[in-house]
Image (cartoon, rainbow, N blue to C red; front, side, top):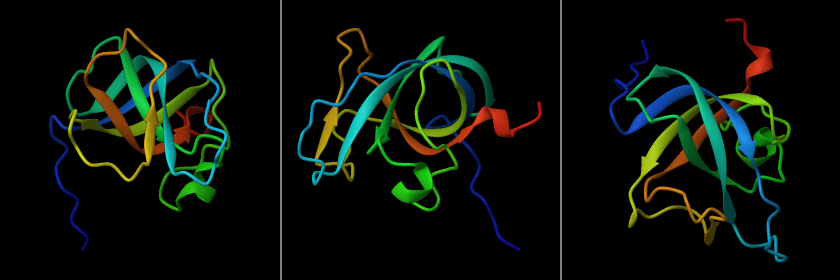
Length: 127
């Protein structure tokens, strides 16, 4: 059988509502960039409590997730007001990421942001 590692304080599985998505100021989409988006946490399924709001880093947000990476979820596009089921990983300030640039439009965001591992549309799930 296939073993899965236990969730810990670094990785969190949750349901969250997208509150804000800024437009991306990068004109050269040849860069592998990411955009920080603001969510309201509705429910944590696994992992630690991340608070009421969470700031999540999404790579190349203009792409459908399956086109971005085959394991990155089924979300077709990021629309404010939609709820998402996400698996996220805490990003420490000096962690290496695969991105050439991370755009964070929020002055009020905490120093801890979260990298999105997988995001699905919550509408595809029954609770």
